[in-house]
Image (tube, rainbow, N blue to C red; front, side, top):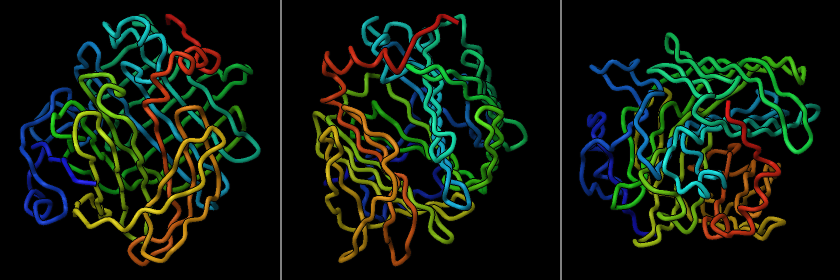
Length: 352
């Protein structure tokens, strides 16, 4: 794929190294709705900025994944403003993002595997510079640590997920990246490497492990900007690798490969080749990057839906073997009226 990625100027100290990489720096300028605090602002330095503006039709989310040190358990958590995958937001005409917020949490590993995502209206959303509450669940940035309180109910089978999480980043990234030349969609890798401490009451699970934290925001619906994308991150012995391969609707493909050291310093790298994985049960195509001549093993299929797949892979990149969180997203599938009609069974809506 040809690259059409450019860094915004949250912090430009790594601009020179990026321009020497495979990416083409096509312009600066901070993207609207930035979700990351910058030095000199009122936001906590390089922490999530939960009161960022979200325009009508747009979205903002914060994404966290974590893997236990023993490899038995995993979690993903996404807090949405203007929930991009919400049928209710789409059916409303996407006029009011704050009236369509959701807290998605997925637990993997037995015992205790659960999935919840309840959408909330404006009365159920409270946010400030350093905190966000969606219904009974919340995120708070305090002293360089992300504190999360979870109280969610699964659907369609009502089971509770409740407890707390602490995320301690090892370093922060001071840049964001446009996914496509138009700049309507932006990715911010907040803390590519962190420690996670999870203590749940329901189900009764407690573990520590490694984690990854980022954010995405955009000024238009995701399916208007892209046909599909593949994203993955892998923790190596020291560094973190992130691959982003996206196919915009009206532009050449976007291909990003970045290496982050523990302190958050970033280097653009030439990505290894793509290899084709077996399609999911819903026939979503999957491709992953791995060193030339190496194979990719599927450890766990975490999510398999009509438009989205999340997979835990064992891969080899830049000479190191690593566990990899991988996602494949088909926006063509998501835009289908039939698929949207299925979503309320897993994604109920409450006004507060």
